[in-house]
Image 1 (tube, rainbow, N blue to C red):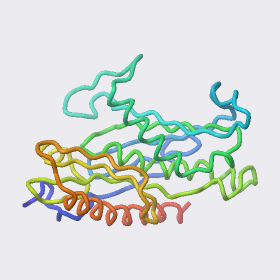
Image 2: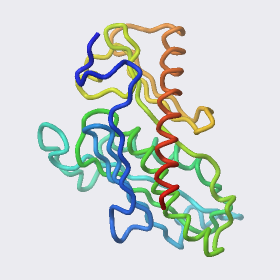
Image 3: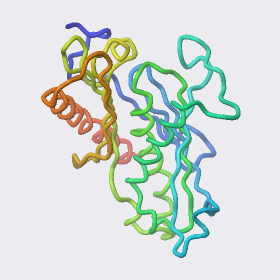
Length: 240
């Protein structure tokens, strides 16, 4: 089967990370997975949410907010001014859960990291691009505090990467563009560490149930893409 952009089934879209994209954020990366562009900004606050301050042993925290900006899709998306939609909340929580695996919250001290992931342009895989770029932005935000001795190197736990995979016309495919995503029989989002350990899998049979064989194929396909993405993340850090 020929893909919409001519890629092989196991091929990523063109990947680009632009670090320090926003002037004022402690960590910032514009993440491009093909025509999906997500701006990930990290804010570090020297304070904690009220519920956490009330605990006997307060520790640091990491939370995330995700949003589709107007005209990031084919039709204008209205700004969610007051109450985020269910999809927005679900993706925000996924990003937060995934990136908390990257940080030792106790070593973070009484600080909170807020990751804002704003989709500038959407063409499938926005949540996985947000997680992958979000990890890089977190790393860039924390490194100056490590360098000046405010935090220990141990605050950094895992390198986190995410990618989408799917079964399209019976063919396992990596890094789905929107046109492939909408016709997929199975849609899977996989979050892993760079060492290959699973953080989260979100999977749905869109048309008919799928078997364990297909699940294993898709996770293996995702793992190969994640290794490539992890290498791209490290290339950015090597040039810091």
